[in-house]
Image (cartoon, rainbow, N blue to C red; front, side, top):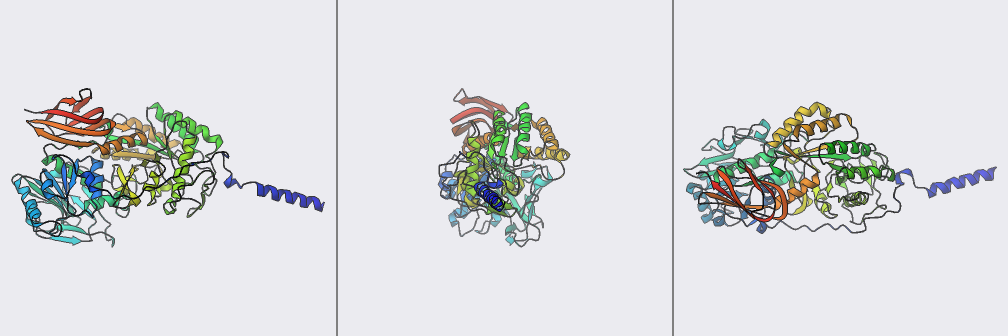
Length: 615
């Protein structure tokens, strides 16, 4: 009997040693990959020379300090669709009707001749916009006595009676958040004392933040804060200490600044053209996105996709390739569940990555080797604060490999991390295995409802090929989604005033109120909004970002020259008022006009559009 017990114990010990614990039982034992290496590109500083060309209809940026946050202007102006060029030559800049001097004016960065010429520019009919007028004797040109530095400022209030800002309606868009009240970490901002004219905007204490001064034909504006650095701060997800809310609210601080600059440009440059921000000249871009990160989410996802297909809507499904059981949940990226992935693909959705392990501390992970592969890559969440054997690249490349392997035709190009945990290395790490589109931050954190290009290491000097598409609305905060439908529609209405993006995040862990909300929202906005998947909007947005536009007025007519190296469909332009479409070359390109908006059906390379002026 004793020998039998010993034999049974030895057998149990053998079986225990020969069998993986449940958490490490992985489906698809014969599968291995990816085999290729993911190499992170080197950091290459943005070259200002790449933005030096264009005709005189563009807004000219006179760069007074190349070692500044001018790339923030590039990314923000491109997002909004403001044509511009950058030069360090003041004479070249002043060939343009509208000149923005950045990052500051002083005798330390500009010659006496340049300062004198800039001072004369608005007197001769030009429009001068200056960031941080710190010296150089130009105070009288802008109409103020002294510049005053303070770290107490935390808000800028737009003057509702200023003519250049009379289009603002929503109280929120009339307030630009720049810090937290009473915070010791607030940055320094300049005010202009005793402005000659009513300010365009003031700080919370009433001192002038943006001032204006008019001449018989020209005008001068001075802005008291570094807008390029401010744009970069928010785009790099480093402004979370100043945003008014995290998600689900209107937060247009950056957009309001851009709308003011665009308004100045359009008012004083007779040939000003703005590139529209929504395909097909719709009022709003809407993307429905679903984070599939729970055991029951895959079967529910199919039900959401079926509903979306019934309305002709294509959505993006960020799917967690969870092949290990851990602290959070059991493994569900398993062989029995792969038919759900096949069904989703047949329904026409975009298959996107939501990591492997969905760690809430993804931002703290090492970047990894770029060699991580299934099944050897085994990230394990121990608890909320502990994740082992995981890397930034591992989560990106292994999830992409698995999703593409079990999809018939999908190429995974979009990524969203679990909990929106955002590593500093994420932009360049995404580029290594071939991603294109990130949806990692909320619009409220980024202070904008527009997409934007991401920088290397979320820093200031080098950019990546990755674009961020921020989240507007999510499903987890109380109350239930159906109970905040009215507020969601009001938010959509606000963003539609300037053609922003409305990205919706819904976890398909349940149907109920989330499903009901989405269906109701689709019905409410389908006639005014462009609705589609991130991969489709992202492709359009990246091509749009590279489109160049120049215009000229001659003999009473307007000519617009457009160039796109890649074919683009549904590009819209806002043109000066008073012009009627006449012709287009090549002649086979379809162009339609509604008021001051034109829509180009589809084109590639160079396009010339001619308009007749009103008699």
